[in-house]
Amino acid sequence: MSDYPFLDRIHFPADVRALNRNELPILADELRRFLIESVSKTGGHLSSNLGTVELTVALHTVFNAPEDRIVWDVGHQTYSHKILTGRRDAMAGLRHYGGISGFPRRAESEYDPFGTAHSSTSISAALAMAVAARDRNEARASIAVIGDGAMSAGMAFEALNNAGSMKDINLLVILNDNEMSISPPVGALSNILARLMAPYDTARRLGKKVLRAAPPPVLDLARKVEEVAKGMVAPDSPGTLFEEFGFHYYGPVDGHDLDVLVPTLQNLRNFKGPQFLHVVTRKGQGYKLAEADPVRYHGVSKFDHHTGLQEESAEARPTYTQVFGDWLCDAAALDARVVGITPAMCEGSGLTRFAREFPGRYYDVGIAEQHALTFAAGLACEGYRPVVAIYSTFLQRAYDQLIHDIALQNLPVVLAIDRAGLAGADGATHHGAFDLSFLACVPNMLVMTPADENECRQMLHTALCYEGPSAVRYPRGKGSGTMPETGLSTLPIGKGEIRRHGRKTALLAFGSLLAPALEAGEALDATVANMRFVKPIDETLITQLAREHDLLVTLEENAVIGGAGSEVARVLDALPARPRFLRLGLPDRFIDHGEQRQLLAEAGLDAAGIESAIRSTEQDK
Image 1 (cartoon, rainbow, N blue to C red):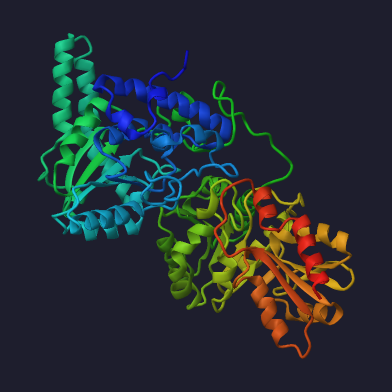
Image 2: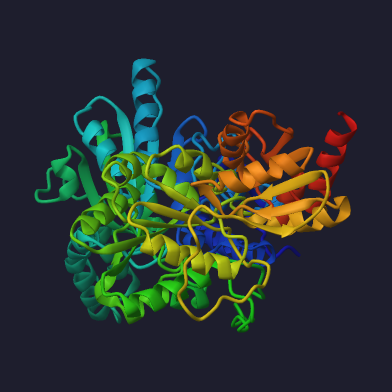
């Protein structure tokens, strides 16, 4: 007999809509159990998905996807949605090479109307779809499901501002308020939501106490009263932030109570104009370990779902993220001007220890990358030494602030860029494939690429001591195993080094590709240079290598177009005679998800791929 008799009946949302109301909680329970079992085998985002089970079931009960557009913000909470839209069997390959994505993707399913993975885009996209439906005279709904963390970003408020004046559209914004993004919330918005919730929470706790011994008819009546009171509050209810934007506000409602969610959504479906539903959920709902520690269970690798995640052993090899976190604490201990800034990625960026040891110099600004950089610029103007810990793909969202507010004013802001290069299972939305290209072209920038853990520490301190904007970009995970020194030292700016002397061919490696370059260099008897700096690039070393070799090959875990190889080409173009030249890097396409080693091999950037590309070039001469 199946462990999931109701879930087995669900192949597409039409099957959900065919269920009786009293069958929906059973489906939700089975869906939650399946999620826990499935994610324990593949790894992925767990806490956020457990928190949206009932909401997903309710949405597919009331709305007619894919005709009705359901846009999920970020999308790391859409596993239930994937399961109910024909992808249950594919969950076995979730986030694995060749398998389905951990985020919504238009190319993956017609039930994913908008691809997401970065935050705060859902309202803009859903608004556009609502406008299109209006202009085509199509009677369909557009729904944006956005978390309270994502609501802290400016883009979400830009969309609210745009939508609020459009009274003839069918747009529903659902705020999934779980009091968290990845980490606990920060800022005024979370305080506003907490104040909105306080009277409801107090009344509900009192009601439960009073009605504990009440007979079933009274309990049924109480539930109906609660549904009316919190699910269908009068749309002209004053005093809420969202009504000031022109939305009709409803809520808060219990996001785990299908007897409340379904009728509330059914009523809202019939309303015109911008509607805003405040849904309260609990991250990790239904799995006690995730409820107790939703941050730890936010993103997980494979684990035993019966016993939970095991404590990680204290391995000798630190990750690059840990190297950064330790360096920042050591630097801050010696320099009171050092402050740490993160756009809502404390744990992921390695700032947990810094936040604990230097709470007065730690700033989590929320999911607000643009603000993070300009905030850092303002602090630099006041004599501080701000260090912004940010993922490579998230830095893309603040490019104007980098140029206009930091580089143009030549301010000493350090960008500690994590997840540079191929980030692994999160896929194309999270690969740091472009930062060398968009950083190297910016005047005043110092751009460094460490080849190992100790060099990462040295470069971070070099950046801190630099009187201008600087960036150190490093990959996800562990490096080659070179233990960082305990002291704080710097590197000579713009100077690379030769790590292996060979003949005819010289490999110019930038950052993470030094290790495979050395391996390929042994097979080819090639010279291998650790270039270290993308800007300023070591023109003297390049000129020397060009004079002594027949072929120069640049290697970078960055888009080959406009990357470090382009800087080398610029130097070679100025020489009276130049050797043959080959640039190896990430190809001109978006690379899918998978293990980092698999993706590097696919891109031809492992040792075997590098050797093969060079031998082919040598044969073509």
